[in-house]
Every structure is written in structure tokens, then in C-alpha cells.
Amino acid sequence: MESVSVAAAFAEAGEQDTALEIMKIDEKNKKIIVAYDGEPAERQVIQAAIPVAARLGCELLFACVQGRAKAETLGKKFFESSNRSFKRIFTEEVEKLSSSTDKIHARQIVVFESFNEAVRKVCNETREVEFVLLRSGACKPAQLHIDVPYFFMTNA
Image 1 (cartoon, helix red, strand yellow):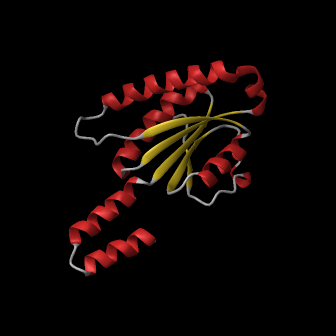
Image 2: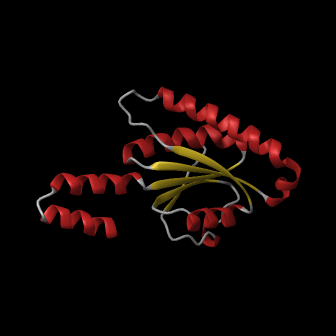
């Protein structure tokens, strides 16, 4: 709201270019959170999220959710391996897009909590969330309790 008010003040003062620039800066802060469980889903969630982010001009935050039990057994090696795999796949998928697409900003985090807890935590700690894309068989919408719109991805 604050940036909209500032942009409106500049527009009223005859500074339309400044107002438009402020609105563009605000748009770039919007994020789409993509929460999924497990490595096999990486390519599918990336393929689903990139076109949406490109169309809406949003940043992507991928949250790979691993249960607490896996935290003990996987540890640092899993985290490093997952990051390498994610970066490789993300780069491949972005390269498939047409060159006219603006650069898409994305980052990945790995969270070791239950799926619903992880999604709630990530949503609460992330600002300017447009919506959340979810891919998990374990997620129960009635227990999710987040204040942003969310959509489920299917295997199809």
C-alpha cells in the first residue's frame, strides 16, 4: 500500500515516469512459493512454475520439504547434492524458454519439518507472496492455515 501511495503522489505531481518506476520496483518484489516434497518432483515443479513466474514477473522461492526424520540421516551431504541438482535442472529449464523472456530470479531452500509446518513457516517469513504452489501427497489443506492463496499441482 505504501508504494502505491507514493507512486500516486508522484503521478499527481506530474512525475509519471517516477510513478511507473516505483510500481515496477514493487512488482519485482512479488514472489511465488513452490513447496514440494522429495527430489523426484524437482523437474516437474520447475517446469510448472517457470512459465507462471515469467508471465507474472514474479520471483520464485522453491521449498524442498523433507521430514524431520530425514534431517538426521541426510544432513549436509543431501543439502549440497540437492542444491547442485536443483541449479542444474533450473538452468536447463530456463534455457528452454525463448530469449525474449526476462531473467527469472529463483532460489531454493531445503526445510526439515512436516510439510504443513514448513509451508506455514516459509509463508510467514517471506514478504510479498502472490500465491503458493504445492506438490505433496501428505499435505492436508484443512491443516495448512496460511493467509495467501494456494494451488495444488497434480502429476498430470
